Image (cartoon, rainbow, N blue to C red; front, top):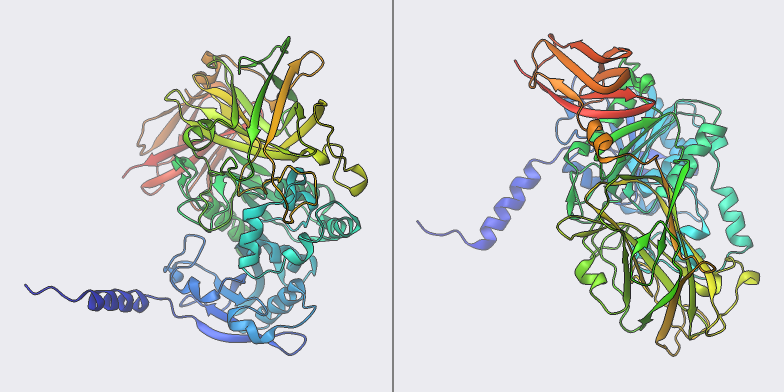
Amino acid sequence: MKKLPLLFILFFSFTCAFAQLLTPRVDSIPMRDSKKLAADIYQPSGCTQCPTILIQTPYNRQFYRFNLPLGIRKALDSIPYNIVIVDWRGFWGSRDARATGSNGGEDGYDVVEWIAAQSWSDGKIGTWGPSALGRVQYSTARNQPPHLVCGIPVVAGPQFNYLEYYPGGVYRTEYMAQVSALGFGTALLVNPNPVKNLIWDISENSTFYPDEIAVPMLLIGGWYDHNVGPMVDFFEGLQQQSPVSGHKLLMGPWTHGGNGRSQPGSSGQGELAYPNAANWNDSMARAFFDYHLLGANNGWDQTPAVTYYQMGENTWKGHSNWDQASQSTAYYLHPDTSLQLAIATNGSLSFDYDPHDPSPTLGGPTLQLGQVQGPYDQRVAVESRDDALVFSTDVLTKAVAVRGKIQVVLYVSTDRRDTDVAVRLTDVYPDGRSMLVRDGIRRLRFREGYRAADTMLAVPGQVYRLEIDLEAVAHTFVPGHQLRLVVSGANYPRFDSNLNNGGDMYSAGDTLVSHTTLHFSQTAPSSITLLTEPSVSIEDEMAWQHVQIFPQPAKDQLWITTPERMETLSLYDLQGRQLRHQKPSSTISILKVGNLPPGVYVLMLEIDGRWFSKKVVMRE
């Protein structure tokens, strides 16, 4: 048989792909200044007047013609929602609507109210979208359009904070490179202001406005995203200051997405997999929309305000708010490179840092195309280099369950007027893998603060206390693993490489190799402090894994036994709809499931104020 030419095969594949595209109705939506935004409108067949999910994007609305989000893909007729996708002003189909001083929130207001006036709309609109598509939801909600009912910002917070762009006083190189490449113009404010000043004060005060959000929001984030701090902070603000209730937070073991296989809701994250977290973002988002836009009696109001994934244990848990663990556990660095609960008696260790050969970034909360995201093994790329100090605990015999922020305090001296100290927290597996959990950095000149008045160059040889703050996380270092802290002089290109010359930052100049020393003693107790749950023994930890659910698969009923008394028991389908709910007040419960169709379901258990999840299967 004669082989077909390669170009013909490519053309045929390309044509077939486009033949399967969704075909929305294209419209243009007038704004208050008479300019128009391009919109794709998707209407399910048989839906004469339906609520609408609005997506506002700077990344070209036409990409959604390949697949719709929220797990819908091409099954448009399977949902009871219109979907409207709009190009931002000045972008793609709306490029001709560019206007100086335009406001995304005002445009969002105009789009919402235009949708509400259409014959195919029932007047109820919810918003959805990740990253920049999430930020514009906050500003739209801030403008309070009358027909906006709810919103789902994903991996996004509205804040514009100094420490978001200069964590530890160090410029986020790869992040800003990607943001600039997308054409957002963020660098026009960030680059000229490398220290905390009035401009940052105004920006931070004007972009934190939970008291102006008057519709319920479901914030969806990931522990490997770079927006953990802004999302958690804004959610807490919503709970305390918003004029309405019903705000919820979902934090999964996910990255920011947009590059590679790691996305919010995907099973694979970096070099790890979390199959029991797959698609929870979509199923909970659908349940949220069903409750608020359709008035569905699906038990959404009984869902915990905060649902989060405890990595390491690999379980879902819930709380009424994001309260960090109250117990703190400090591990002290020792000159034998161990991490111990006891403070070191005396000693020091040193490392060099060469700006021409910085310690490389591998994974973590990155954004730039070409950089991998999420948990990656640091052994070869980072720990094997001679510019890193690696400190580890003994193999753990009890679980260390972290829930909250982490602080590293190092006592350092250097032979230069300025340098950086970068840290990475990893989880060491029994097979030796050292998987990244958190990272951070601090520039020595900013050891006292980030304003110009706080800035002080170092005196070579003098010992300084240096604090490095790491974002909050929910991660359990399980028995058999080790907790590890890697210290170096860089983490590039995630963070700018210090020239070590003490001169102006982010400008050309001579580079110097720095020689930095970490000190360990009663008066210089270098340490890492974790907010942890009370310690549990191996037996207690394993008991939590021994929740018994049988038979599996089930047909008529489920028997559930737990090591401690269950307070609440609920069964959900994968769309987040609550199908069963009872309060056993016992360690044994029977759940009748006879009328449920075959498939996979999620069983949520509340035990001692904590929530746990288990997947169960129903058979014919």
